[in-house]
Length: 343
Image (tube, rainbow, N blue to C red):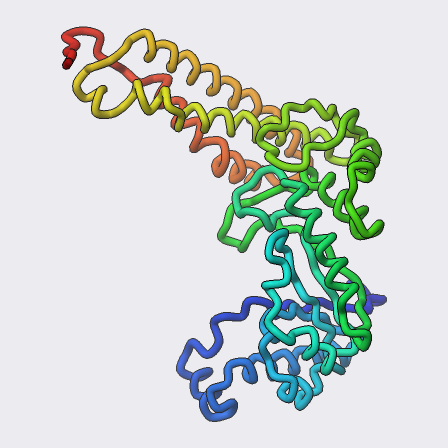
């Protein structure tokens, strides 16, 4: 498919389930003397050699070799076979992810090393919008790491990853059009070596926003930045609105007024303030209608971007659980006679 490709990323991250069955346990015991890291490295070598035969350089995620011994990696000639990509997406305690001497060990084995950061998805598994500040900070921290690397390492560059699911069994998070502003901000931060108010304003204008982009607490975004002008800007705006309405709806459902006046114990005893209940049901009706209208807009905007079954999953994951809670409040039947009161 790609005859001119020079690099192929072969994964190899988070390989936690090694030697889980009887056959591989015997191989681990008899061939590798119980050393799971050595077992893993030999598999990497086998795959890497196959890729090298195609005149392509394999790249691997580095997390499974961070504590591997220099001797073991050298013995397997790993430095000639692969180029590791060190991933770190943290915006806090960035350097704590690296074991002691990790960079020195890599310098002793690998002539060339990559880095990997993230522009979307790494904050949480169930976010609709991207908190840009949490994504741009790691870019600046990566630049600090690069400046302190051993001189013997040829640092290739930083790959910007973007997560759409945490795995195939998790829900979708942070659709690509919604994360385009974060991608642009992160690229500019890496390119200039910093992130300043001036850069923030420049990027916002380049994306067509009238005012600077909101960088955090995206659920509070009220659209005051204006409507952007970039591929997917319509989806960005609709999902930002949906996220805000969902946040307000959840605040209402789990807020003090519903907890205080629709308390199950009070409903059971028919101790009800009808004025409060009527007001809460009117508000629930308002939020139901707001979410329903925004769901229609969301479906219409996404139909050319993703398959219908993915759209259904998105709505069922984020909107329907909240809508059901609101609908339960809206349609709740309360008794209006024979009420009792206790002092």
